[in-house]
Image 1 (spheres, rainbow, N blue to C red):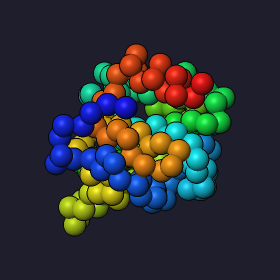
Image 2: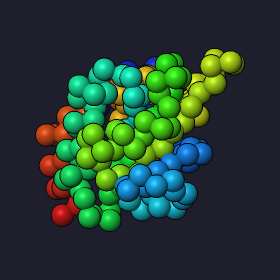
Image 3: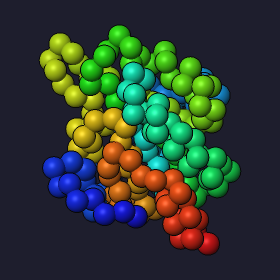
Length: 167
């Protein structure tokens, strides 16, 4: 599932830490309780983003949409997105999650993980997964192991690879 040459970022090869995100909306935009057990035994495609990130809008969200559409209804795959706010705190708010869901037609769970501008602390998801900013993609296999952790994954390559694994 891709080769991560950059050892500074990511946790490829390690067990995925639990997502410790306090605010989630469901596929219909309603506040939701996320349960880590929802991911157990599944392939997980996790997209980290920020609302004001140009790269997220240029290729991150379109790629996320393609992956979400490819696996809609497949209960072996969970597609999630978390806004990991480490800058632009007034633009990257949880209130923008539903707007982004609708704009990109993303019927997926979306979370909001704000850092703290007062202490210059990065969001928990960024720290736990050692992301290098946004956009960022993490792929977790059904055993809970991180198999991809990098800025972007090409959906034209990823989708058929995962479909082949699932057959």
